[in-house]
Image 1 (cartoon, protein in one colour):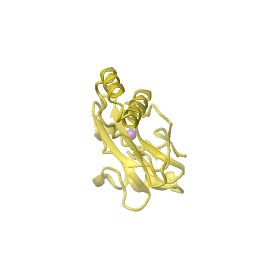
Image 2 (cartoon, protein in one colour; image 1 turned 45 degrees about the horizontal axis):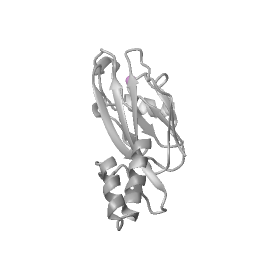
Image 3 (cartoon, protein in one colour; image 1 turned 60 degrees about the vertical axis):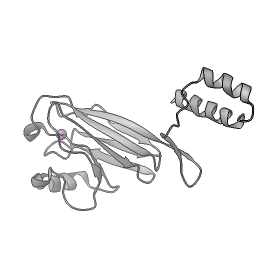
Image 4 (tube, helix red, strand yellow; image 1 turned 135 degrees about the vertical axis):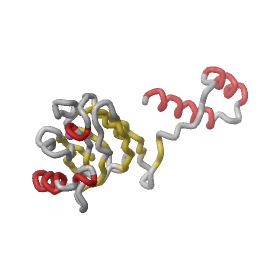
Length: 172
Ligand code: CO
């Protein structure tokens, strides 16, 4: 992150010194690669919004390795779920399901249990976003825009897992 900020600053310096050829040449020698960075964008309110990348693992002990994520409203989120166990997804399947605020976890989990044909993702408005269901050794990535400010629950919706596999997704 610091590096990309430096590159952006030097790009701005280069641009503002465009008429000074001597200085531009000297600086371009020091920083030969000033490729444009796409990871930083500017939204309508002129606030800097970047992309954040997360990874989370699930194991054969029915545990995620993270209980909390923090992001900023509108931030692009890339989340990779990796199953570091060996058990098959039919017996120890994991997914990462982000739930709308106000969702009753036990009620949702009951509906999810009945949605086996849809990888335990029930129909309705409760699911904001979810990954694929995976088994040991597999990994899957999703990207999405962080929802509005607030605290959200995430769970694994595989039957019986939400009690242990859950956490908070905090949007600031
Ligand atoms: Co699971």
